[in-house]
Amino acid sequence: LLFVVLFSACSDDNGQPQVQKKQTQAPKVISKPSPIIYVQPFTYFPKERVELIKRELKKFYKLDVVVLPVKDIYASARLEGTDRYAASIILDLLQKDLNKPKDKILGLTSYDIYDPKEVDGVEYPYWGIFGLGMMDAMPCVVSDFRLIKFKNKTNDFVVNVVLHEIGHTFNLDHCDKDERCLMNDAKGTIETLYKEQKWLCPACVKKIQKKGINI
Image (tube, rainbow, N blue to C red; front, top):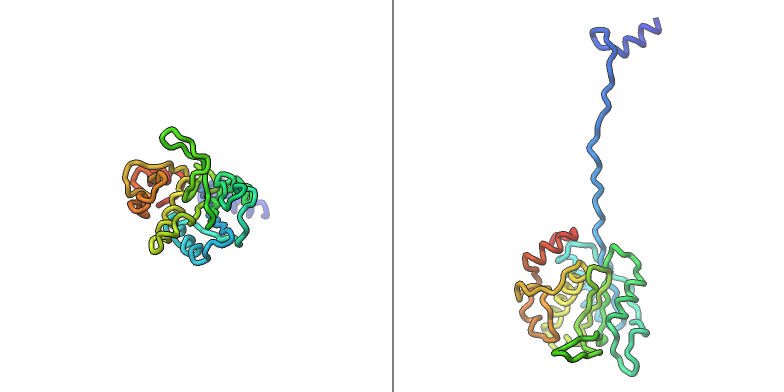
């Protein structure tokens, strides 16, 4: 009797054994985590400007932004005998401190920063700059030192420089497609910042979308 009951439980209405079908599930799609933008304010950079930059970064790149505790700027990046700092050294140290290759880090300083630049065949080892970003990498740095004299335009200019330098970390090079594009090269002058908008041209949008960033 027990045998009959067990057999019946495994048979269809015609008394034929049923073959259990293996359920197939759709493959799981593992989404790649979005990068986080870390902001590292250095001593003396205005707190209100930090908060503005945080809001603008989140709005433009649609990514999480984390502000780190304020710290002194790296003494090892200082040009001896001056209050000027080497932007490239700051980038190396920011990257080393964060050590999160999939994320980004932005240094903010009110000290003057510089990087070597060639102009008309002449090499300037200490060319003053607004900011510097490492292409397709983690770090960038922005200084408001050369922008504070523009008073009511300072915040707008600093925000545009920040968005520009973060763009470099997402592999956006300098753009010559449209003078309004955020990725235009400042070329050491302020005129470009007056023309730039918080906007990327279609070519730059297409390029950054390949990095998974939906502008």
